[in-house]
Image (tube, helix red, strand yellow):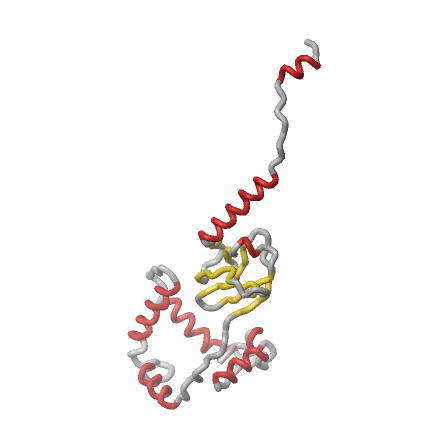
Amino acid sequence: MWDREGSIAGRGRPTQPFAAFCGQLSVGWVILEAADPQAKGVLERSHRFLRSNFEPGRQFANHLDFQDQFNGWCDRANQRVHRTIRAVPVERLAEERARMRPLPGRLPDTDRRAVVRVPQQPYLRVDRNDYSVDPRFAGRRVELRVSQTEVTAVVLDTGELACRHRRVFAGGLTFTDPQHQTELDRLRARRRQRDQVEVEIRPLSRYDRLIPA
């Protein structure tokens, strides 16, 4: 069930990627009608309930800890009779699972992909974070692949791994692989040595002879 999101069904029709995703899972979709606040409220009411009943007073170490605490909270909350469905959610879920078809053996590939050129400052931006790339591949084209857990880049013409990072959903952060930093320092030191120019150092007495006191 979707609320006419642009990336899913902006004009009330499923986009081609979304339809392909559902086709691989053999599932259908329900797209809410425009100007239907009641249907939209059913979706948003559950989100508001979670924000007001689960999140207050809790601390989370990371997104994994958030998910772990949320799963435990749902296990307890879904044991009671739900006012809207007039049933216990865990019991209703067990009935629905008995009617559901199994998922296909090969699940759809949901990774984001893009072909980009590594800049001279070897970092690639994903969402609002910067991830380091092996500086040896600066100026080369790589295939950037973003999954729910990893950010990887592979050089197009050679297949070499340019970077692999754990994906972080917090924003405004920079992640530098220590090996990338070591290689970057080595390349910079070699460049400085190459750019050094021998400069003659003359004694000041030579200027005294040229310029009388």
